[in-house]
Image (tube, rainbow, N blue to C red; front, side):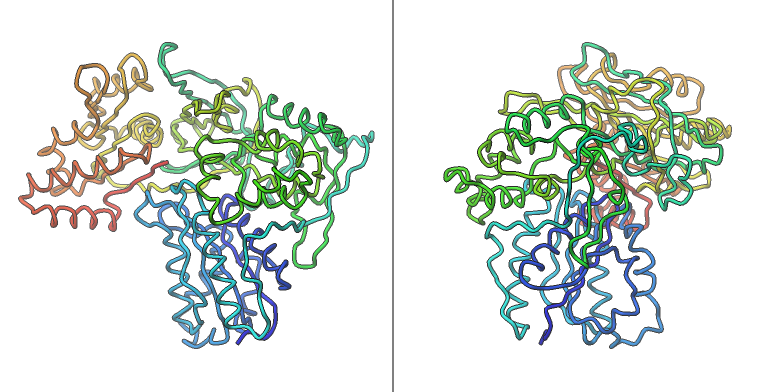
Length: 603
């Protein structure tokens, strides 16, 4: 029995998605009369956990099944062997995981957290929820039915009734947002970074951010090729920059384009909502259990928020339509918003938003009557934040003497049934930033862990999947350890003359005996040839490397079809060269993956 309407929501979030869902769930609890914070696990005093009655855990999985950085201390404490098996006997809990089913360790962190809580005597309130990035509806596909089940369970356990209808339109602001007119306060500048306002005091930041300057921006595909891919070279400007290792990733937070920012202000100007670029915005606390984030604790310009914080290219969540429904005075628009929020409206919402990739700004244009009723408080709840993007580092820290970070970026542009071209936020931002521009970044561990010895590396990297392997190849060359006996690269693209990224360098390495290079140019002949076909052709050679020399397999690139096709090629090699059955070959592949002799980094 849960006697008090008190809950704690603890999240582990690497890029902000789990934090965002936690705040969304906090709103729903608040609307049902519950109190309690939504905070990062490492910010919570874990000594209080033994006395809690109800805790909801929301956590993502990062890297190769790793917990997020703001969950590590919490998790380490829970793993203590001296904790009594009934430590958490008072606790009733639910776990919601955020993951990507294209990875072997799908929602690994949520699963092991759920298991550990049970081992410590806690009672599971409802089945673990496993959100999947690959689903058409994203996290909402699991989050919405999981929360509906949560309210039902709380009604059964609690002494007080809980509203089980999670589909009714609602609006609850996290903070109070006030606008003042333009001032001459010179401490507020449009050029200031919202997250790192003091570039001279970065050492205190947990992420260890640094400033890097764009040195070059080279298109690696021909002008005739359908896709624009860029090799960008940045130079870290911090003398004490810690550097990076092969397999590491660089993280950066993009900004909205000028065209998107202009459209935002045009929309609200048309509705005479009196929102201007130079308005000073102050965010203050309303609820004791929802503090204002550090980056909002000082006044800021509205233009900073629009350019740096709100993701103007994002597909709106159901909650955005809930806010519109609450405020709308137009019967047709209100009914449509309510329909989108209902379980029966999921397919309609998919067809309206998710499949054509309709952005939040385009939704506001379509629902123009409802948009005219919005305030800044509404916008803070409707818009999602711009999330950091991670890129495999394509340069060698040792070869560049810690003075260079390269990334290989495919510029995302495509059409749906909508007339306007869809543009990837980060890739187009990177494409267009001028030489000499300085941006903030931070380095974290990626999925790949490369062996330190002279173990043969079998690297499969079609397209921009080449990036982490270019890092390794450059480093091995710098250390004078590069050899075609230990560096084996399978590269794939459409045309040798169209999109052979870094082709001249790779061919030069091959001709000098420092790299074994096999290329699959899928469109340079009548029949399509992909990397998996080239892998099977090299079956005997690869089997010898894996079986006799403990060669490690690394697969990087698009997660759609390539990874499974490549893994199936290795299964066929094991069947043929190892005289295995298909079942045994598949099990052998799984063992390689568990032991990290096979690793994947896909997106």
